[in-house]
Length: 244
Length: 218
Image (cartoon, rainbow over all chains, first blue to last red; front, side):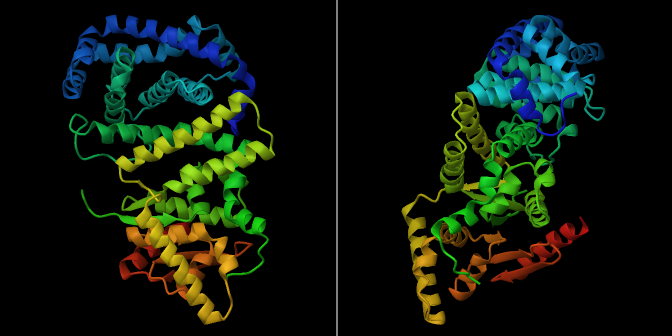
């Protein structure tokens, strides 16, 4: 099991040399999987490609129970599907030894955020965001349609990364019941996608990005240096004058 | 919805507790920092509050500290360097997202009007304190230019400064500066917490009393 403290440092130490391979393999695998999932939820995918947010949400809210069940099953099988197509990811799973699927999505999200930090690849960032969204979609309190919102968002980004704002707005709206921060915009996402997208980004940061950055800043001494910023400046100046 | 939010300027060493994850930092903090972190995060969580982040913190201070660590700790691995730079970039992007929701407000300091205000405050503090105490504090004040910049930001934005640094209290009180300041004084052993409120309105007093109560409960 990954040590609970400083998990990000552990990921870098154990998997750092494979970051590029994991990134390439998972990107390719996801492209294929999104295509396969697309056949199963064709009616939604058609609208995702051509419609606006209001139309997409309307379709998602009206699909049959069968489609919703399939979407959930697609998400639950995703970690296995990915590892079947990525040798390096299989190695990561062996190191992590995580049984719980939500914990596994959380670890995958951390891994891809770290890969994004290491190589600046925005696709890795969006993979991380969607792994986190999948974790949330499997929560008990999430709506029944939450997994379909996540797949629709993934399909939007895979089809056109320029529409990332809409994709993230969809995640914010579709997962609103399980978001850790409740700063809900008053307007619906089709009226103000910026706010819904920002809300999801902020939640993702709260649970993933901020934690990873903090662990790295602590491990590399940046936190101590930041905290002592002002004291450091004073001692550097050689001043001993007390201001009070 | 468009209820006006209270603007708060957290001093840099309190802002750090909000920008980084408090759960991860908590086990590493001394008792004093734990208390200060509780105050900072209580302020951040309030829906009626927007935290001002002067751009100089993200554009100058954080990169300066990172650069110092890179040199003094000899961090030369290219991957580590990329991670540090992208982490700073990503932090800024997160703040920009939070700005859309009104949680943060990025404030551009690099502007002649704003810098002029800082220069005026600097001179005022220097002259007033020298007159009152008959000590020339020029040398000391020169090491505090950033505090004066934060005072200028607070003045221009009509924000309250929340700080654990006694210099702010000193500058405002002795320099006759009309910027609201909330100074949290935690003694070294964290046995006593003293709050000083200067130039603070009754509404701000009530606002801080609520925060104080929540922190005490924790």
